[in-house]
Amino acid sequence: MDQNRLSITDQRTGAQYEVPIVDGTIRAMDLRKIKTSPDDFGLMTYDPAFLNTSSCRSSITYIDGDVGILRYRGYPIEELAEKCSFLEVSWLLLNGELPTPEELGEWTGLIKRHTMLHETTKKFLEGYRYDAHPMGMLISTIAALSTVYPEAKHVFDADNRKLQIARLIAKMPTICAYCYRHHFGLPYVYPDNDLNFTENFMNMMWKMFEPKYLANPILSRALDILFILHADHEQNCSTNTMRCVGSAQGDPYVGCSAAAAALYGPLHGGANEEVLKMLDLIGSKDRVPAFIQQVKDGGGKLMGFGHRVYKNYDPRARIIKWAADQVFTVTGYNKKIEIALELERIALEDEYFIKRKLYPNVDFYSGIIYEAMGFRPDLFTVLFAIPRVVGWLAQWQEMLLDPEQKIARPRQIYTGHDERHVVPMAERHVSASGDA
Image (cartoon, rainbow, N blue to C red; front, side):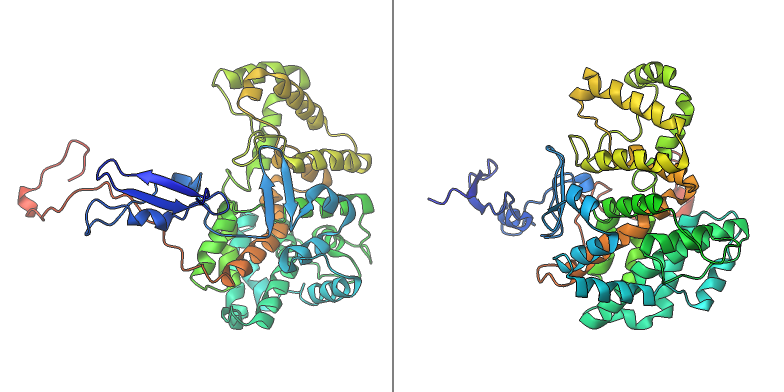
């Protein structure tokens, strides 16, 4: 007898059902055959926030949160961060294999050819107030690119898809840098294709009067590693949004704009900024024990600890912790790292946090590094979006080519009124809740 099945007895009717188990899952649609009568709709699952629902089959990113494993296309994140560049990893996520030297050269050249923004797009950015949040600017500018490249709507044309993917990856750093300089009223700096991906981004951010911007190689490499760590992370909120919009066959610009909007939320992309606020609130290393006790008493929240998926130490946090040491050799020591290390030390030894499996995540150290490198906190989420667009696009392309995927349309459990009828205005009364 096949052991890969689930036997279900419906106590309402006494009927028995056999449901196949494949890859540790059952298909939700198999539950629809469990009915109390022929006209019954059938059984559904109820899973708020998708805590235990797989919405797709994917070969891109593997996470084992209990052990603390993250792999892109089978490669451990630690090896990729140590041995590869961000553009190598981008190719890997999009194509399934690490590039050959010839493929990497062609891919790098393609990205460099598309770093420029159309001049009308620059004017679009200039229309924002000086104090506009860069994520709001980024979201709307990405969406506006849909009008600049209307051919992007031909999503099943492979060559067209490749071109739009390259455009998006190439233009994200340019848009981010222009958002930054807009805030200060500085002239925009055009891309310099003599530089690598992260060096060029730093050039567009910080070049002033020097004839040629020379990025510090330690900072450039640290930023490259941070981009690798943030490139994809399975079916998170923004990736799920990208797949959802893409399932309606929207073009990649509107899909990435929607995904960036999901990333904008403080529970997703804005968490590292919240960590900095927490460290500022603590103020000094000697005040950490009192803050820890305050959190345990329910009087605060430990930002940068815990994760929906990881119930162990986030592997990205270890790498970022190492990168922080490299960055501080250039920028000087940041006193926030003392507070962070003490916070981590106490939390990892405290039974309260151990029992709840609250370990440092990627956001705990990334904000400290970004701040040390000179990035403003309101740019942190944009720095997240620059590499994550690669993951969004890889997941979007995989979704498009998956024959099982259809337009996303979850079900609901209706909890409202049964049928009722309109009462004439003169006979309506205010209810106890204040609603008519």
